[in-house]
Image (cartoon, rainbow, N blue to C red; front, side):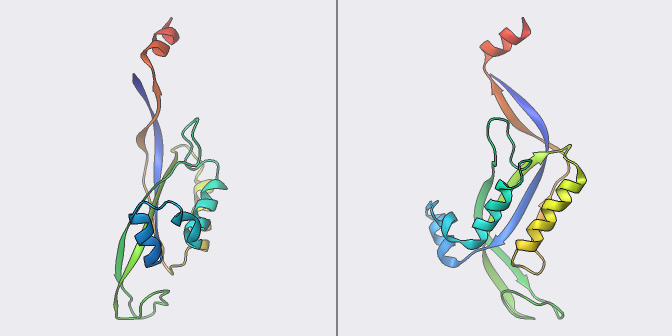
Length: 149
């Protein structure tokens, strides 16, 4: 089997979630996705952007994990959680998806702006990589030999 690679960029967003949602997700309860308004909004944003998570026969592909974010709010901050000068730990949903590396910068900017608009944090943690390669399609050896004929 041959693996076809595709040039993509990775988008990762850290999203605060309720402790109950964190516990449910950590136990493998995928229904928790439907009960957390922030996750619902994030997944709707993914669904509304056909260029995100496009893996050929699979659309809206994403990966997720749960963890914690830690921060201390400085003077001038208007925190959603915590207080100025206070160390805060927040249960966090980490969402990762990919998009074609050739996607127009304006389209990327529009999606990032949409994420910032719906994100509850004053300064959301959003990571965007440069081009990298991910597997896109696995081609069986029989198909490969037919294609070479």
